[in-house]
Amino acid sequence: MNASVTGRIHSVETFGTLDGPGVRYVLFLQGCPLRCLYCHNPDTRDPSAGTAITAGAALADILPYRPFLARGGVTLSGGEPLLQPDFACALLDGCRENRLHSALDTSGAVPLATARAALDRADLILLDVKAVDEALCESLTGFGPQRTLEALDYCERTAKPVWIRHVLVPGYTLDPHHLERLADRLLSYTCIRRIELLPFHKMGEYKWAALRLPYLLGDTPAPTPAQLEAARAIFACRGLTTA
Ligand code: SF4
Image 1 (cartoon, protein in one colour):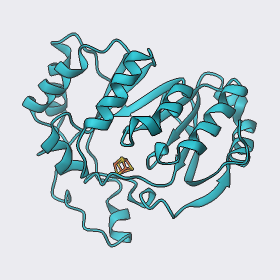
Image 2 (cartoon, rainbow, N blue to C red):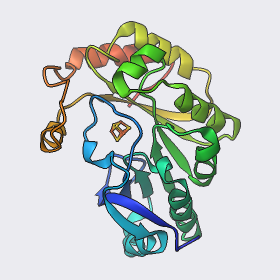
Image 3 (cartoon, rainbow, N blue to C red):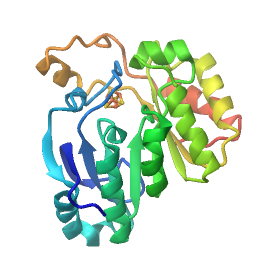
Image 4 (cartoon, rainbow, N blue to C red):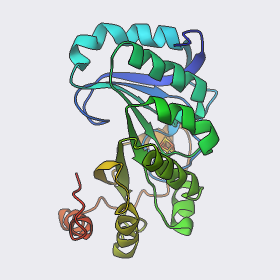
């Protein structure tokens, strides 16, 4: 690994159980180009914020936890880790050299030419597909879905295992027509190992207030159990299991 590459991190979680298989050390990298309305970590967006650290120092912090990560591993999350591709690549190399399973939690929202090296190095891609419809994706994140879908196509070509993650937002993505389009789109990919449908929540709303940013989903309710079940049924009737 190139231990001297410096990146900026927002925070770490030493015992994560939500971002990939098993118990994981999750490193949240600073900076994100998207502007998701439901973002629960808006304080990760500014690429100049956070703490500067070398890849070597970040890895040195991970290695003492290795006995606990044997059935899990390390996840690079954010923010958007691909916004710091050299730093992400160095960390992923360090994981491989130390026989730690690595996952890259990304929206794929950078050009494929930038993303490719990190996608190649990670053992697993956790791909946040915000929406497949151009207008819906733009209204939700400020950007279209093209780069995300290009990243997914690349994973298919390279047989890279992918977990899809999709947030169900009432009034936006929690819509039968959208979910049918998404499920139909995902059907053809053999690289997809798991599809996670994540209910919208407002646990990060206080961070928007602290940053003096307008939170536009304040009146949006969390999905009901019946709505979640209906969303899962759209995938199930196509033979797609969701978590
Ligand atoms: S991609 Fe993640 S970190 Fe970036 S704005 Fe969206 S929810 Fe927030």
